Length: 233
Image 1 (cartoon, rainbow, N blue to C red):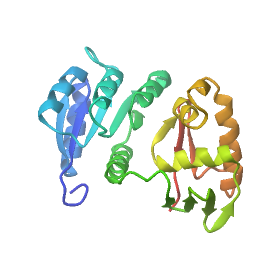
Image 2: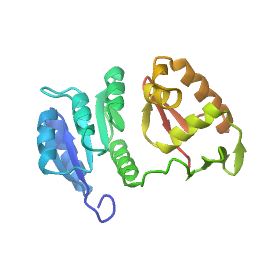
Image 3: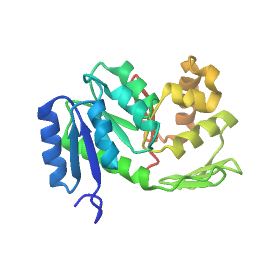
Image 4: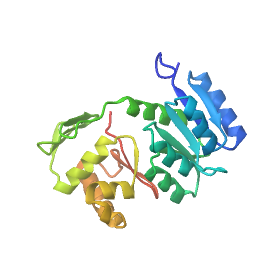
């Protein structure tokens, strides 16, 4: 059964009956309890009487699309949301992530990829909130926030103040897709969200200091969208 002994509830929202049918069959066989909805309005009705542990939603749907659904859900809940998009929908994909979605999967997708994203999102949802002034220990990293020191595989890395702030924000949201706007607002302030060159420069500098070679392992680029931090094994 998925997620050990606990049967987790997943709400699948898509106006394509074939997709909801396939996802319901596949995810049910893995031990998840599944309910479906054809658009955002129907999804909100389901949520009134049933508490999903995770929502999977398409972006383009009639009546209420996935973007508006993300906004409405975030007014009342922190439940993980994975959006389904098609290739070329980068703009609306970014808007959905900025509106509160946690991750995305591009159609056509493999069930192995989707279920891996589901497991990761549920794990993150079960983690306690990281105190804002504490050590962050995960994978290859130990980040002492009060002391502003970083160890990667026990090797101390010297970062500038902004590089450190960017790394801490990425680490506190490990595994989650963070859009350019989200990172710029968090690290440089809301007046910097239209200046992505800041982010490109600092991500490049961080990679040079953190990565052992030219193939990024820790800070993964999500093309046209943003970045995802993976702390290593």
